[in-house]
Image 1 (cartoon, rainbow, N blue to C red):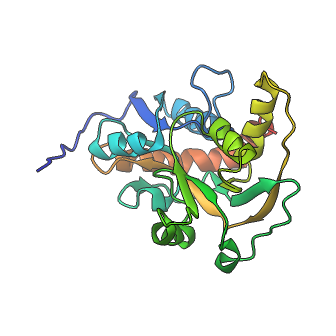
Image 2 (cartoon, helix red, strand yellow; image 1 turned 120 degrees about the vertical axis):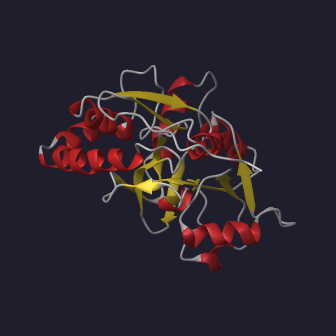
Length: 248
């Protein structure tokens, strides 16, 4: 039996530990000058309130586990469906749209679940793709035709590109910003000649991206109020748009 301790501490001047996986341009390398749209946004909000961000990069399943237990204060870039027991601020920082990416010469298009038959779709372990598609993953994962192929790790884009090139999969389900951004980065840094090109074949409904705060940290509700106030200021001042423009 597990017992979770609700941790409390004075909010003023805290070091706030938030975790995410590598999901650039939303959450990038902690050592980079540009750490990601969502990281830069929450860092700015916390600084305005006298706090310091400690940004930890781990795989998503571990990030959720560590935040849920109270070891971390929360997650960066969560859907509500990723961790519905967590505490969320009111408005999302950004809207994510999960889209189906295929090779450029693949004529397939997504028009609903009925069009997914016989597709081999790459998804990331422990990710939520919204309630609509999460149910589809549960029903079709580990089926004989391998219609859902789950992967994990830190260099996910490289794995997916290699799987597409070798025809292990034919479809990648990923955020509309994330896959093109990371393919471009992979192409730029690749030692081998690049030939494959990809296109967007259709998207799922959009989902909000939030800072999800731990249900087992006594400071979470206070941080929610800080984020609600700080995010409005970030939007009204135009600073959020400035942050986004650095990644376009």
